[in-house]
Figure 1 (cartoon, rainbow over the protein chains, first blue to last red):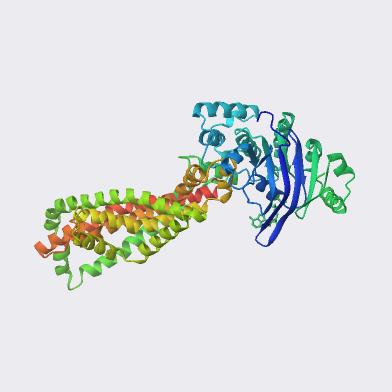
Figure 2: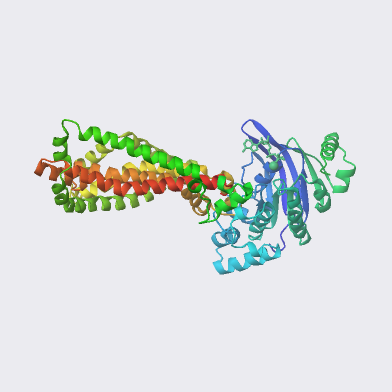
Length: 252
Length: 293
Ligand SMILES: Nc1ncnc2c1ncn2[C@@H]1O[C@H](COP(=O)(O)OP(=O)(O)OP(=O)(O)O)[C@@H](O)[C@H]1O
Ligand SMILES: [Mg+2]
């Protein structure tokens, strides 16, 4: 995107219910270019739902979402074209089990961007190399560790060269000793200027990496600010209580 | 796993996954050997006893003459084998059409969106109707009804209608098998594909269907077995296939031996397929148990 106007992502008053259950009750959030924003909040507060809405995997009930100035929730937009610009990585990896690592990574570049197979493979191998996965290119996902699988899932998203990367609790399904390797990858992406919106339970990581932290509570962003402020001097009482609980669980 | 008692559970799992190095404990342990022997002996004794009863029954000489006529068996075999070739052709032509048509129907029924609602409705009606009707009835209606209309250019060859009827009947069942496979692929797979920008069709084509089809191969083979046998149903509309041929031979000699020859042919053809299906099913189960996907 040459000279993309305005923020990378702007979410305006987004509402979302599943049936009668309201999940998002008016979310306003802006992510600047090259900014890293972490979403924290209790289980069920709506973090995954918000990310899925941004990727148009869930339709929203009200509100608007803009990516680099273009409204992606406008009626009649080509969702496939929008999703090409936004990468998402899921908690459960969701790699394609019937394909090798290389095919997982090159599928979308080949079928969506219509790259020649050789070119798609070259680009995929460069990415795999960068994240220490080049020797796994021919393996199938079930032969990889959880950490490796999640790194492949990140590479798969990056292969589409997204302007914005959404990460949904990408370390929650991992054994503790595998968390570090995935977090290292995300740090490296942040250093490279990737714009990211990250839902996470890893408070230490959020404090390290985020430019801004948003505390989501019952479908609303209750408090947001720089990590030092949110983690040291949270204003809202519910934020304090949430962080208290997290601390007791030993995750801060 | 008794023979591998020295290995940890993980080692055994690894061994179980290595091709050609599966533990053979069941065959090698002495206890298992003895129970195999007992099973074998009791089977022989049981069927030997039944045979003894049959052979010593008052009607046996008559039954032997009309069902087990060795000369007639040899004499009728060439005709029967030639007629079986018709069944084989029927099977392969119909099966090819079934695999394709059933897949189309399954995909139509699994595609969401209001635009396709009428198509889904039609596909559902088709599946319901053709599963509800007895196969012979469909074969009759198509095989006699349509040529009976005497429309110019409409084929009159019964083989043609036999293929169409079997295809219509079996596609209804096979599409349900495919659909179960499609439903068994977790929606997160499709979501992952869509999130990369693949269209709904591309997600289905490259991500969902390959996994779905792999999972339903054993039940598909099961339906193959059914079709293999049901090819004899088209004898009703005048296709001279193996069953019709054995009827002809039977009528010429007033002897039932040709039916026995036919039965033998089907046993030889079908049992290997049944074994293969069982083997695939148990292999899948082993794999699932080993935690591999
Ligand atoms: N597809 C769905 N259908 C119905 N309800 C849903 C669906 N997806 C999410 N929900 C509900 O929406 C609420 C928010 O879920 P969401 O997954 O967004 O929370 P979360 O903040 O990501 O939680 P966690 O930290 O456990 O991942 C929950 O109450 C959940 O039960
Ligand atoms: Mg979640």
